[in-house]
Image (cartoon, rainbow, N blue to C red):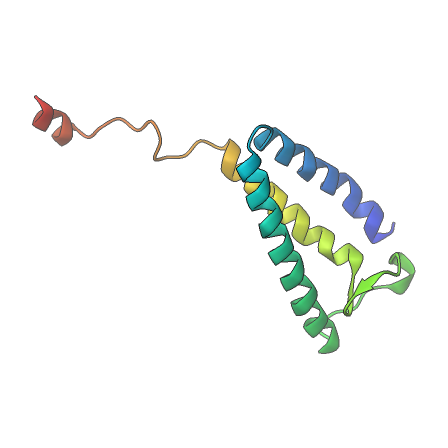
Length: 111
């Protein structure tokens, strides 16, 4: 199984989660796009450095062949999946700070 085949269902799931989380939020999409550009640039730089240092290798038979720096294009998929899922979960999961009942001491001060 190639790296692209492994990433495709995960990337689709992450995109769907982001669409659900940011469906009507233009500012959220803009922020997500800016974050994606930054994360992709950092991924290319640091993965290229790690590949140059021979910290890890990819099986060329399983790659599409497109590279940015020394990093294969498939390697960007992992970073994009992480970004989309973390942003979607941040938006969809309830915050502990929202809707919390006031403390008993605050209620006593109001009385």
